[in-house]
Picture 1: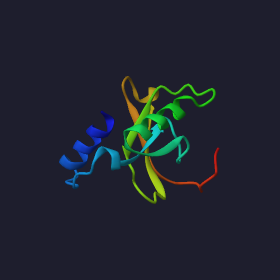
Picture 2 (picture 1 turned 90 degrees about the vertical axis):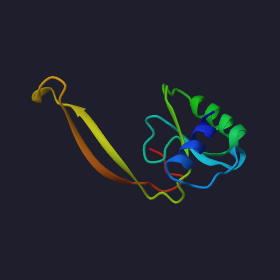
Picture 3 (picture 1 turned 45 degrees about the vertical axis):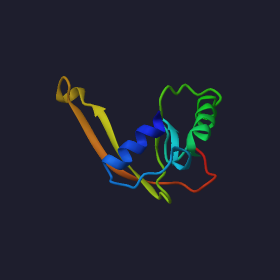
Length: 110
Protein backbone atom coordinates (compact mmCIF):
# COMPACT_ATOMS: atom_id res chain seq x y z
CA UNK A 1 0.00 0.00 0.00
CA UNK A 2 2.84 2.45 0.79
CA UNK A 3 4.42 2.10 -2.64
CA UNK A 4 1.08 2.47 -4.46
CA UNK A 5 0.36 5.65 -2.48
CA UNK A 6 3.80 7.04 -3.32
CA UNK A 7 3.29 6.20 -6.98
CA UNK A 8 -0.02 8.07 -6.93
CA UNK A 9 1.57 11.13 -5.29
CA UNK A 10 4.53 10.92 -7.68
CA UNK A 11 2.15 11.14 -10.64
CA UNK A 12 -0.47 13.61 -9.31
CA UNK A 13 1.83 16.06 -7.54
CA UNK A 14 5.06 15.88 -9.50
CA UNK A 15 3.72 14.78 -12.89
CA UNK A 16 6.30 12.01 -13.16
CA UNK A 17 5.77 9.13 -15.52
CA UNK A 18 4.45 5.89 -14.02
CA UNK A 19 6.69 3.04 -12.94
CA UNK A 20 5.73 -0.42 -11.74
CA UNK A 21 5.65 -1.07 -7.98
CA UNK A 22 8.39 -3.69 -8.42
CA UNK A 23 10.74 -1.13 -10.02
CA UNK A 24 9.96 1.70 -7.58
CA UNK A 25 13.09 2.79 -5.67
CA UNK A 26 12.80 4.46 -2.31
CA UNK A 27 14.14 4.73 1.21
CA UNK A 28 12.63 3.78 4.54
CA UNK A 29 13.81 5.69 7.59
CA UNK A 30 13.03 5.73 11.24
CA UNK A 31 11.07 8.78 12.32
CA UNK A 32 13.92 10.41 14.19
CA UNK A 33 16.72 9.47 11.82
CA UNK A 34 19.50 12.00 11.60
CA UNK A 35 21.79 12.68 8.63
CA UNK A 36 21.18 9.35 6.96
CA UNK A 37 21.45 7.14 10.06
CA UNK A 38 18.80 4.43 10.15
CA UNK A 39 17.87 5.04 6.50
CA UNK A 40 17.79 2.04 4.18
CA UNK A 41 17.16 1.89 0.42
CA UNK A 42 14.67 -0.51 -1.14
CA UNK A 43 13.24 -1.50 -4.51
CA UNK A 44 9.76 -3.01 -4.72
CA UNK A 45 7.31 -4.37 -2.15
CA UNK A 46 9.21 -7.49 -1.04
CA UNK A 47 12.44 -5.59 -0.46
CA UNK A 48 10.54 -2.84 1.41
CA UNK A 49 9.08 -5.46 3.76
CA UNK A 50 12.58 -6.81 4.53
CA UNK A 51 13.96 -3.29 5.09
CA UNK A 52 11.12 -2.40 7.50
CA UNK A 53 11.77 -5.55 9.54
CA UNK A 54 15.46 -4.71 9.71
CA UNK A 55 14.75 -1.14 10.87
CA UNK A 56 12.25 -2.11 13.54
CA UNK A 57 14.50 -4.89 14.85
CA UNK A 58 17.41 -2.55 15.65
CA UNK A 59 18.69 -3.47 19.10
CA UNK A 60 17.37 -1.20 21.87
CA UNK A 61 15.49 1.03 19.44
CA UNK A 62 12.32 2.57 20.80
CA UNK A 63 11.21 3.97 17.44
CA UNK A 64 7.51 3.78 16.67
CA UNK A 65 7.49 5.70 13.38
CA UNK A 66 8.95 4.82 10.01
CA UNK A 67 8.78 7.06 6.93
CA UNK A 68 8.83 5.75 3.37
CA UNK A 69 9.71 8.03 0.48
CA UNK A 70 10.93 7.97 -3.09
CA UNK A 71 14.69 7.72 -3.46
CA UNK A 72 16.44 11.06 -3.94
CA UNK A 73 19.81 10.15 -5.45
CA UNK A 74 23.11 11.73 -4.36
CA UNK A 75 21.78 13.62 -1.33
CA UNK A 76 24.42 15.97 0.11
CA UNK A 77 22.32 17.84 2.68
CA UNK A 78 18.91 17.95 4.30
CA UNK A 79 16.66 20.80 5.38
CA UNK A 80 15.55 20.77 9.01
CA UNK A 81 12.96 22.82 10.84
CA UNK A 82 13.44 22.56 14.60
CA UNK A 83 10.31 23.52 16.56
CA UNK A 84 10.40 24.40 20.23
CA UNK A 85 7.63 25.26 22.64
CA UNK A 86 8.30 28.79 23.89
CA UNK A 87 6.87 28.88 27.42
CA UNK A 88 8.18 32.43 27.97
CA UNK A 89 6.14 33.73 25.01
CA UNK A 90 2.89 32.28 26.32
CA UNK A 91 0.52 29.36 25.91
CA UNK A 92 0.70 27.64 22.53
CA UNK A 93 3.65 29.70 21.29
CA UNK A 94 6.47 28.06 19.37
CA UNK A 95 9.78 29.07 17.90
CA UNK A 96 11.08 27.64 14.64
CA UNK A 97 14.69 27.42 13.62
CA UNK A 98 15.46 26.45 10.01
CA UNK A 99 18.82 25.04 8.96
CA UNK A 100 20.55 23.00 6.29
CA UNK A 101 22.53 20.02 7.55
CA UNK A 102 25.37 18.49 5.53
CA UNK A 103 25.29 14.70 5.33
CA UNK A 104 28.19 12.78 6.83
CA UNK A 105 30.17 10.30 4.75
CA UNK A 106 29.14 6.73 4.02
CA UNK A 107 30.04 4.30 6.76
CA UNK A 108 30.11 7.00 9.43
CA UNK A 109 27.68 6.52 12.29
CA UNK A 110 27.14 8.64 15.42
